[in-house]
Length: 115
Image (cartoon, rainbow, N blue to C red; front, side):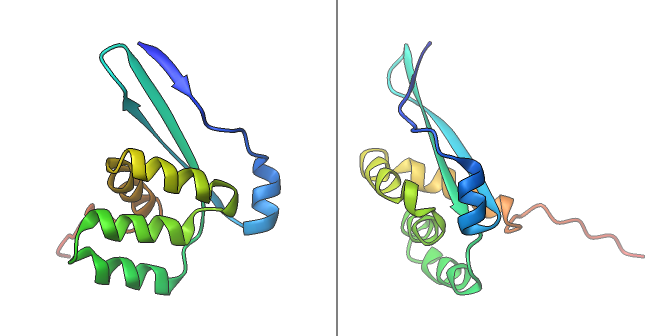
């Protein structure tokens, strides 16, 4: 398969200085049977109100909730590209949004053991 990567290189150290902790989330999307494209975005730590909005809007649809959550957390340097990519490939909102929420602790993987 041919790789098509249109993600611009960002200075990670500069992002860390500007935003604190930075998360890099990527996804590979098949364009056709022989070509795929990598999408990589950088996110800052979302605020508690951002999590609250995510949970509240999840009942209205996961795509909408993930899109709003990601736009709250994406670094300014990736915002315009992320918005355009989500318009062209709407599934990116759910795929990348799910991975971002997992990285930040919002997961279904919880263990309970009676002691």
